[in-house]
Amino acid sequence: MDQKINCVLLIDDDRATNFFNKMVVNRHGRFNTIVTSQSGTEALEYLKGVQKEHNIKPDLIFLDINMPAMNGWEFLTEFEKFDENFILDIKVILLSTSSDPKDVKKSREKHPVDDFINKPLSFPLLNEVLKSHFDYKAETSY
Image 1 (cartoon, rainbow, N blue to C red):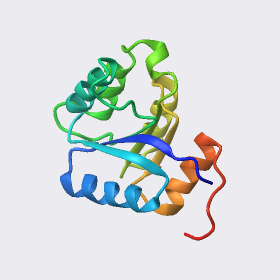
Image 2 (cartoon, helix red, strand yellow):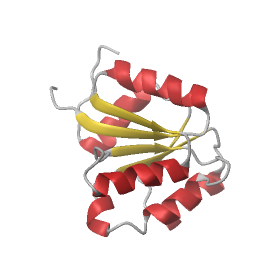
Image 3 (cartoon, rainbow, N blue to C red):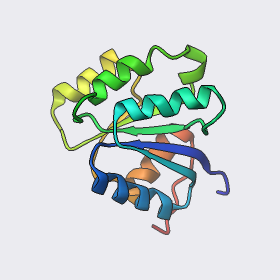
Image 4 (tube, rainbow, N blue to C red):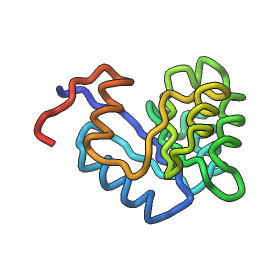
């Protein structure tokens, strides 16, 4: 399994969570570039930079739901305004401490969300994401 995900974008307002998640994703070894963003607004600016070819386009976004100023739902509303061809191949996974069934249902019905998983990230969760959304075979060494 030599193929890697080119870029993952981690969006979370909590610095410690972003630091931890970046460390886990980096140590996993199947991701080339890891970009962190402290807010939905900052992440949207990053994506605008991708369109201008200043930034690397993410293949995968891990998005926190509960953030101040612009929460995950508001980010998704703005994300959907990008050109359909631009966002079509970006997988969006909500990463939350919430296990509220209403959040899960809302994520699937109203927004272009590919999955909903609970924090924190771990090797088994990353393996499942790769297997479910990128047709990877999970490594058994983790």
